[in-house]
Image (cartoon, rainbow over all chains, first blue to last red; front, side, top):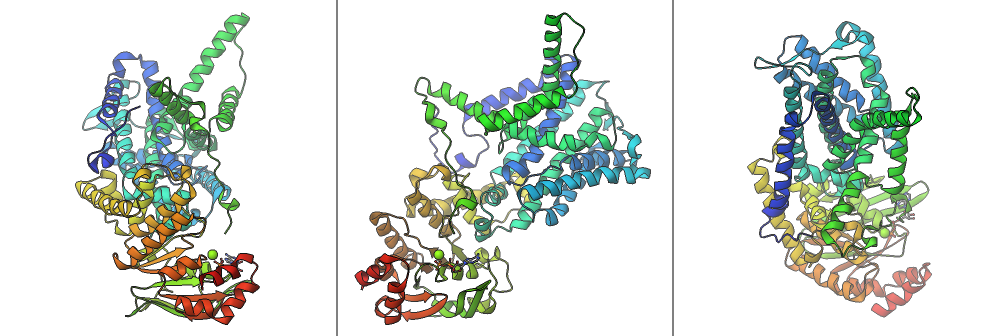
Length: 365
Length: 266
Ligand SMILES: Nc1ncnc2c1ncn2[C@@H]1O[C@H](COP(=O)(O)OP(=O)(O)O)[C@@H](O)[C@H]1O
Ligand SMILES: [Mg+2]
C-alpha cells in the first residue's frame, strides 16, 4: 500500500494523488488514443458506443451518486441534447456550435425543471422524473413539424472546419471525437468534485438540514446538479444521435432511462470509475450474450436459439446480484481486489465489513 | 456590551404543543449563554428558530440589530450564525476534511464556470480554505482523523468534528446543542476548555444547550432555564441553579437524575 507523504496542501488539491497514479492514467489515455490501430471497425464501434454510454453515465452519476437525487427520466435529456444538436445543424449551425449548444439547452432544461422537481424526495422524485421522460416522448410526437414525429430525423455528417466525420466513413475520427469529449467531461467532473460546488453536492446528499446550516442553498444546489447532469447527458444524447444515424421519439424511451440508472448502480455509485465500469457492462452485454448463445448453439448442434427478452433478464439478474452482494458496485469490488494485492499477504477478510449505518428515520430527534 | 442576538416574545406551536412560549432574552456580544431545562423544554426548538428552520407564530428574532425573520435558513451562515445538532448531523460519506471544508461554503467566491475549469483563482481559494480549516484541525486536535470517513468514526470524535465544522464558518455566534452529551469526563473537560478559548481567543459569542450542570456552571456567563417552553429563570449560573422554580422543575421532571445533578452542581 502506498503511503503518500504530503508536503503541502496542494497535494490534496491536485488532480492525482501521486505520480504513479498520474502515470497509470496517462498510459490508459495513450491506449485509448491508439485503439483504432488495435481494434477492427466493428469493435471500434463498440468502444465508441461504450464511451458514449460512459458520458451519459457520468451525467447521471453527478446527480445520483454525488448529489443523491434519483432520476428515472434521464432519457429525456438524452433526447433534448440529441434533437437540439441535430435541429441546430439542420438550420445551418456548424457542429462545433450546435454540439455544445445542444448540451447547454439540455442543461438549462434540467436546471429549470429541477426547481419544482427537487422538492420531491426518494420514490416521488423517481416518479416525477419518470413522468418527465414520458412527457418529452409525447412532445417529440406533438412537435412533428419540427421533429418529424415518429418518422424521426437523420443525423447529418459531422463537419468540423471542413473535416467530415462519419461513423461508417471514418470510424476512427468519430471514435477520437467521442474520446476527446469523454476526456473533457472527466476533467470537468474531477474539477467539480474538488471544488466547493462538489462538496455542496455531497452535503445535500448526506444531510439537507445541515447543508442548509452551513449556508448551502439546497434548492439552488439541487438545480445546479440537475443542470450539470442534464447538460452532460445532453452531450451524450447528441453523440448517440450521430452514432445511431437515425432516431425518433422511441430511441430515447423509458427503458433507456432505467438502463442508465441500473448502469451506474452496477458500476458503483459516487465515482467516475463506476460510470465507466457500468458502461462497459451495458455496451458489452449484448456481445457477451451473442457469444454465449453461439456456444450453446454449438453444444446443442441445433439451429440457433432465440429467447426474447434475454438481454433485459440477464441485466436485471446482474443488478439484483450486485445489490445483494456488492452494493458498492464493480468499483467497490475493484478497490477490494486492489487492496488485496497491495497488502498481500496481510489482507484481512473483515477489512471491508459493512458498517451499520442508520437511516435518518431511525434516529431520535 | 451590545446585544448580538435578541429574541422578543417568541412563540412557536406544534399542533397543540406550545414548544416555545413567549420567550424573550438577549445574548450579549462576547458572552457564553446557556439554555438549560428538562427534556422537551423547547431548547432545541429555540435553536431551530434562530436557524430559521421554523417560523415563529409570534415575536421577533434579531441578529446584530436586524430582524432575521425575512431571511432564508441558508443565509444564516452568511450572517455569521453557526450551529451544531443535538443528534450529530454530519456528512457521513465524506471525510473529516471535506466536512470541515463545507463549513467554508459561506466564503465561496467561485462559480460553476470557474470551478469546472478549476482556474488559478479557484486553486488559490482552495488553498485559503484549507489553511483556515487546518487552524480548526489544530485547535481541536483532529489531525489523526483528517482523511477518515465520518461513517467509521467514534461518537466522541464526531461530536468534535461537528463543532469544528461550525467553527470553519468563522461565525460571530456559535450555537452548540448539547456539546457534551454522551461524552466521557475527559472529553467533557476538553469541551469546557475549547468553549473558553472560543470565547476568549476567537472572540466568538456562544449560545449553548447543555444538561451537564458542572460544564454549564464552569463556562457560562449567564443561564436561562426553560420548562414547557416557558422561561423560568434568567441570571448567573448560581442564581439559576438555586432558583426555587428551577429546582422544582427538575425534581418534577421525568429525568430522575436531573434533580440530583442540579443539587450537586450548586
Ligand atoms: N418538529 C416537531 N414537530 C412536533 N413537535 C416537536 C417538533 N420539534 C419539537 N417538538 C416538540 O416540542 C417540544 C420541545 O422540543 P425540543 O425543543 O426538542 O426540546 P429540548 O428542550 O429537549 O431540546 C417537545 O414537546 C417536542 O416533542
Ligand atoms: Mg434538545
